[in-house]
Image 1 (cartoon, each protein chain N blue to C red):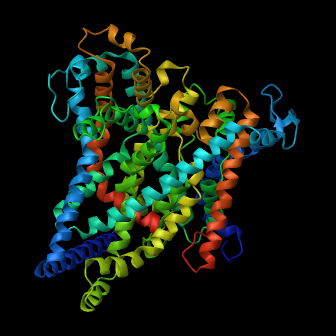
Image 2 (spheres, each protein chain N blue to C red):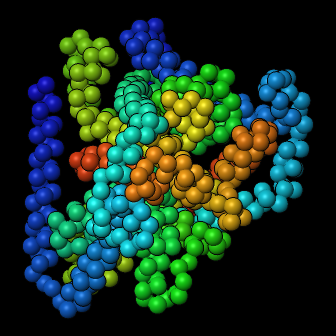
Image 3 (spheres, each protein chain N blue to C red):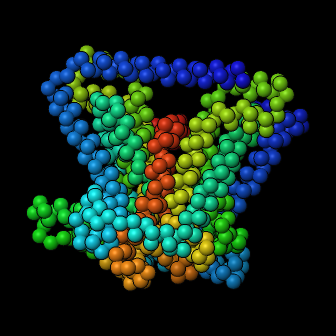
Length: 322
Length: 305
């Protein structure tokens, strides 16, 4: 464990050094500001402000609509602040049985799917990153090929059908358990861990299981967090598998799929009468959908800023080196 | 493989790794390689009752059928057009955004802008298309702005005209992925040797000259590699957004190969035709990757393999 803390210290040290270099550079930059420089900065600042507004406005607007009275919202003109404030849209959404079931299934698939994917990708990456493992190269190649060649929608559909994965929860978590991309991201990170750690553990009599669980995995927390975020977001956002395989089982549909049904019902205006039925006329399909949209994106908005330092490093490592 | 001969002692020592590798390989064969056998369907008159093994072989009839179908030709055009447009605009936007963000003087501002820029990447296409529908509706912000600035007299119904569909899809892609795609360029920019900038400054280079002569050459390898990877994906550029945004009025320009596969394969039950269309897409993608890779190789640029 001594070496572990040594490495961590090294990492911390180099991070500090980078910061120092950056500060010095910044001070140096600040000294000379010419006219052209200033003009550039102002234009750049303006560009960034426009960029942020264009990115954030639609989300904030949806939030405002979701908090506004439905019939009133149809008049238009709601930008960032609700005009007639109400929580009715949210109440209506939370009373819809299919949305509640969808939310439950989505939470379950995100938790179980992420855990399964993380464990299996970590094990695979561990195996192929062992330098003396006799089939490391072959197993790597076997998976990299799957990145470029796949059977396509219909063969996959028929396979899942014959495996009995249709109308089941398993179709959400089993087929996507392993992916070459996630494996490569973890493998790259694991290769950066010094071999001497493994060797000294082996001298102490540790087997591969111990090395994986006690030596490598604790050091891989950042990359595990990255991959977990990728998989979790994918699970949370996915709707196509629900539509394709579990459309017939109403207790297995997901939140996004229900949201899509809500969206298409609003777009076609066909079932709007049905959506209005259980309201007091203050809730419209549009306002209910806004509320459902906010509820669906809320968990992600809350989580991703905290994990960004991980995925930025993870993505860069995985991307640049492969 | 390792140069050392496989000895019984080694096998015994590595048995944990071997067992795991075996399990994972079996899984991989089932879920990733077995569907490839399904490609046989494209050359058969596949009937679910007779199955893959006993269906009648008909050679390339299904492919011939595909290419004599005017709607499939249109679908190829749409896929290619949207793929190329999306690739071009998202690519350029990500690079421009990364460079401009890197030039931002305020460190705090940089961080805030960057954090906000990832947000759309984490939203599903369902949410993004819902937001688009709102923004582009008759009372949405775009029409309101256009009317108030006097550009148009009447709100435009953006989803009813074919000419707006491709630009909408391109904009949605830019909105969703610019910040995310920029991460990798930002990382590449950070790894450029700072002394190069100092040398350029001594030579009297201004900001633009530095961007042109130091930053861009510095991230060129990254640009090349990503371009290569994405060119192979040009035919993959779109299923969800086209499926979610498309409607009867714009289906001539909105349908892509994947939607065609879904429509014929799953909804109409012609598994053979759907598979043939899927194979066409995969083969073209792989050919594109190989061609671009060879071109990169010839010009001495970065390459995938």
